[in-house]
Length: 492
Image (cartoon, rainbow, N blue to C red; front, side, top):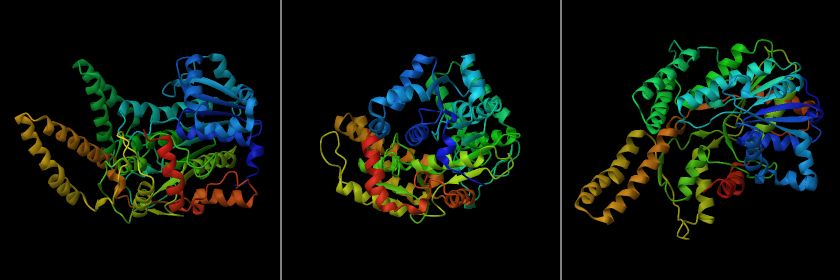
């Protein structure tokens, strides 16, 4: 593997970014425009019916974000000209053939001009409807690959997946691919086309029964988890993402493809500025509940490792992988797990300490204008002790309140509602994150480390395209960067 200057490679290149309104996609677009304004063109695929609605989404969900303030300061009054020259909005939908691009001239233009395709389109919701996740994460990957095959001079396709395609596996988890039909538990019979048929049959039956939209949504969520667990995966998200990888590997033929698997993605480490975040993602849900005083107990292995990686490092790894795999043979090692558990592990108990220190010093102000006082969380090390605690502390009192409420008292009704909300909140978090609270896996990153070393030895601009987790001081990062970032940008 040989690498030249990343900045030189990006110059005059034409790049398609799918899922352009997503968290990582926005950071990617900002990075390219800021460090290499001589990129020829960025085509941004947005789910939109037409050019007008795509423009509205671009201004509201991309360029209007605080993420772009450094770019705005750098370019001043020239920013609009830069955007007009460098960005082409593509209304479309990756769940459809040819990415749902209706404009035939625009399709032909991309097929003739694209050098690079970055597939960042996905739903990351753990309990997404199965039909939605299958369309986006699985068949969407297939559609992006097929679209890329029609590009006359394409250098490389980079498909962004997740390291948690390994499910609940423990030990060293390698940067190896999944072949079509592979399963984690050894079960046979996984066929992606059959999965689509299962979805269609279930939808047809529900509609024939006159089920409400709410009932259909719940049934589709349950179906996704059920189908995932049949083959050894814990939730719909990772199941549909691994099937997307299967499509990529099975159908890529001679195309140069790289698959990037980030772990838990957190706010930016330093670019375009430290701490930019968007939405509530994975561990941030716990910080949200804790900071607002709603999470006083939880369960998990306090000595376990939680694998997190800042978003700007993920984007930098994607960009360097683009350069490394441009015109490379399709059979080279092409999977990159981008995380920290091997090189610079973060321990769950340390994460709790960081949150306690931050919210003690800077407490959340509730709707009544009063600071929320946080304390140490009671942590249970197994499900049995957790359920015993919940029963004695909450469920039995809840039943008592049900009886009292039957007697008429509004006071008990209020207490009942508050307690019920707290139980539902905690139990939902437990169910969503249970597979990862006792996660025993370490993500090998041999290929990613090789990419780092080659970049360093080849004089690549490693100060610009940094992605080595060993440089992170986790205590400083969480207390002074990440938690302040999610409080500012993500907490509502």
